[in-house]
Amino acid sequence: MTISNIYHEPNLVAYLQKEYINLVNYYEQVSRQSIFVKYYNINMSSIYEDKSFSTYDHYSSSNIQFDIYEFTPAYFLQAVTNRATYGEDSAGHVLEGNSSIVINTIKRPRINDLVKFYKPVESNEIFRVIGLSTPSNLLHSNPSSEWFELELEYAPIETTDGLNFLHHYVYDLSEEKNITLEQYKKTINILEQIERILTQIVNSYYTKYQDLYIVENTYIPIALNELIYKIKKDYSYKFKRIIEKCKSPYGFQYYTNLSIPYYDENPLFHLNQYDNYLDVFNILTKETENIYWSDLNSNNNELEKSFSLAYQLAQLFAVV
Image (cartoon, rainbow, N blue to C red; front, side):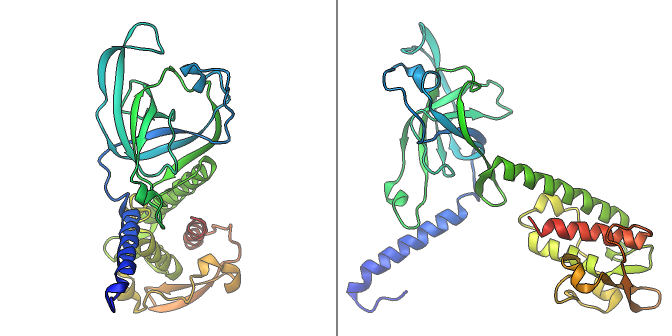
């Protein structure tokens, strides 16, 4: 953006501020100096008991409902400091714990929200939010950036079992957003299947000497090698830990004189459009053979087994 004259400077400042906020939002999860917490956020549809003024009312007597946020990343957590003090909402002197935490994945933290720590912290202590602060210029900008510093102290409850819960979310690090618990379980299930099938493919067909995937030292399934190459190329950042043991077939072009991508669109994603035909390079004859796979569920030989595993893998990556 350029400035024609001094009257354009306000627009320039607004542009630079917007660019800065976009960069903050983009890189906000790159660096975290802290741990993950379980966050209980008060849902504003909750019903309060106006006649009760007890501190315990927030968690026991009222109908306040909480949304649970699992694995909430904390950008910063101050060490919990314990000191003996007289508790106004408990009997006699107690050890009071204080801390503060900075989070940027909860849309609107609220006073009396609850925070719990995961392992290796074994104290099972529950903290409540007693104060919060945020840069309001970032909060009300477009785009907005939600960064909150929360003051914490021990909550006057021993367990969260009796609380009323409304929604349950989990923070997805790969997508960098909160998703529902059902979505998270589904994603984890898919990733476990992907890891299992990838491991089976690598152990069965990858040859380190030729650096490609080959069946019975003869048949090079082109669609399988292309699929693995695509996975390593397109998903290496998102699923790094899952596919890091899977090797990209760099020896494919050397042994086949074919290039990747070989297909305009990999047939493993749309086999019906290809009438269940898959190309295989025969390393002995140096020719490409068009193999008909009659039944997608058949594993009559090792080549069909490789087709089946590759097809299953493609279907899983089509939905993640």
